[in-house]
Picture (cartoon, rainbow, N blue to C red):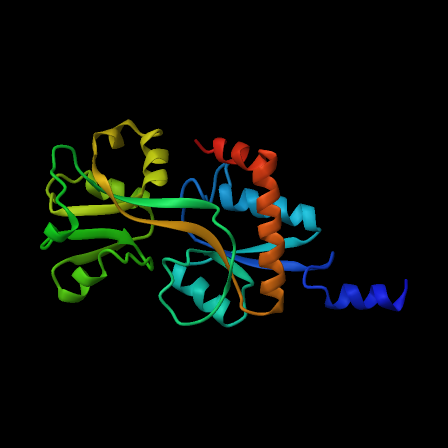
Length: 240
């Protein structure tokens, strides 16, 4: 083997012997991520295809939202799922193109009227632990709305089955809600807002270093080719 090839293998950001450390949630986030079951989720499906194409391996770390962000900032992860619209810190990162557009809606028990956002003073917002909701931050800060944290959308939907708490409103991504409703007839009784409370691209967030720069470029090239070939649409259709 020539000296030039050896140097390439040593210093190439994604060489054949390389491993990417990716942080994923430690609870389900359908249809994008699943902790157990036959489905892994859209994110893992894409990453596994990417790894196979570029000859790298992936170590997945299943940790809570805030911890995975801290691990990325400390250099313990190479990437995690996030959205540039949700990130509230000051650090710089490299970002992938959108894997999907996440639309959040409000959900209440059947028969309830869901007011507009500015009329939700006095309500309890059921939200995912560690997640940021820009549309509601001013209500939290003013004390007009209390936030109750859950570790999954499924836990929120189960809590909404309690009719005694009709002043609770859950914020859930429309895709996750559609996934659960299709698999549980009891969830079909919920009232869903006719307006969204936020839209953001679901992305991969990479460390702001040479490795992150090269990985994000390669992943975006991979994603572009996957979409143009029609394979991306097939993956998405598998999770309808």
